[in-house]
Image (cartoon, rainbow, N blue to C red):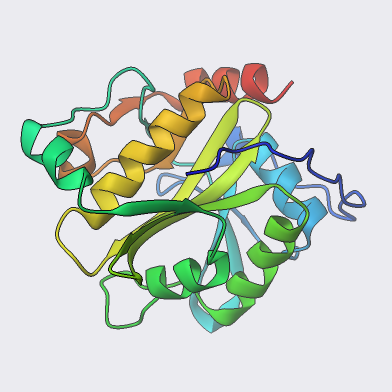
Length: 218
């Protein structure tokens, strides 16, 4: 398993948009609608505590939920059974980025909202060195993984999938180990769920999260 940060990422042209402040989010966490998914816009958004998800009619919404789910890099809950299961899988980094996104966006999955527009946009960011996939393979087949953006010491986890038991959990464990190895400080998972909470995800207020992002991306 190779690590993150083998090559310095390339800074894209700046966004032509001025995105609204995360502090303007409504009760659902929606900050604004519009703009584009160019690399410069995506990096601007994540550095400001925002992330995109599509709304109806293909409009792009920009979100900053309160509270925010994060996984402390020293706080992942790893059971003995997961440690044992991890030995079954081969972990790879950045070998099938677009395919991981497409698997995460499978419309048969609940909340499978990732469409081809998002795949193309994040693949461009991946090609610039900012977005990464951590993949689990079994007998030569991609069976799980996750993807996200690494900006300085901040990792924004976007989505994960599995087709074999524990495959996504093993990818998450590998990601935590990779982030710790490269000196990262903040692992964002956007919203907490009971499943993520069982793995160690906690919630922090938006104001605290924004301070953490600013410190990790400076």
